[in-house]
Image (cartoon, rainbow, N blue to C red):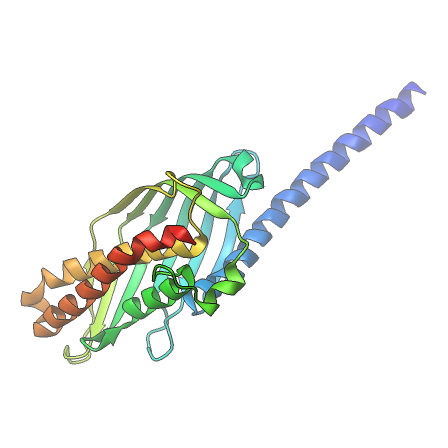
Length: 252
C-alpha cells in the first residue's frame, strides 16, 4: 500500500511538471499568435513575430524578430524591425482587464523612412494606428471594432535604445542615409487612469519614433539637403496634430 501511495505521488508530481511545461509553451505560442493577429488590426500592415519566450512565474520575457510591414504604396520591405524586446509584467495583473507592465525595452530597432514632402511611410503608419485608436476626439472608426474588448495596459517604463533609421527620400538620388537616434524614454503611460488600449500604446510609441526621426534628420540638413527640410516641416505638423489629439485617446 505504501509503495502505491509513493508511486501515486510521483505520478502526480510528474503530471504537474508536464502540465506546467505545457502551459509555458502554450503561453509563448499564444503571445506569438496574439501579436500576429492584433498587430495587423492596429497598423493595417503585416506584422510578424519570430518567437516569444515568457515566464509565467516571474512575468519577465523576451520577444524576438518583430517586423512591422510598410503601408501600401511603399516599396521598402518593412517600416520597423526589432531583434529583441524585453518585457516585465506584474503576473497577477495578467488575469485582470488591465495588465501592468513594469518595463518594456526595445533594443536596436531598425526603422525605414521612405517618401518625401508629399508623405512618408511612418506618417501613414501613424495615421493607420490613429484611425484604430480613435485619435479624433468624439469619433469612432469602424477600424476599431476588431480590437474592441481587449485588455488595457498601464506601462511604467518604456526604453527604446539604439534606433537605426534608414532614410530613403525622393530628391536624394536613390541614396539611403543611415542615422542612429538618441534613446527614447517614456514613463507612466495609462498609469493615471484605466489604462490604454494596445492601439493607443502603439500610437504613442510610433509617434515618438517619428518625432525623434524627424528631429534628427532636420538637424542634418547639411547632409541631406532641402528635401528633408520640407519633410521635417510636414511631418512635424503631423506629429503636432497627433499630439493635440492625444487627449482623445483616453476616452475610448
